[in-house]
Length: 136
Image (cartoon, rainbow, N blue to C red; front, side):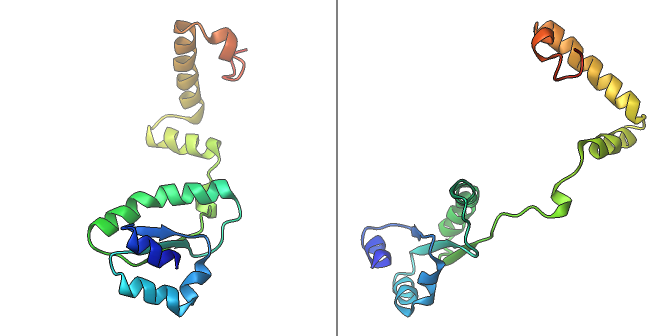
């Protein structure tokens, strides 16, 4: 019924947390009979409402672009995950940056600290932020 009401009201799509709606022949038939309407749901449930909302907002521009190109249908959003390659120790990243710049790791840190200290002094923030920047 929600899909039919959305079609009748001229909506472009429906977003629903319950992907089981797409297991009901009536829901799928409502989309088939209203080909300008799309249905957006998650491939796997997300229990954190903040993550769920963020995932929807992150994908909505892509969904809208696809709909604008005339490709309507059922959109299955992936579950947000971090694979092991998505997390890198800052120390390792700085080491790679130093290597790319053909300088040593201690040189990279010294140059960065000097730049930060100059900027903090210029902005009169050294007393406030110097401790967290390692100057205090």
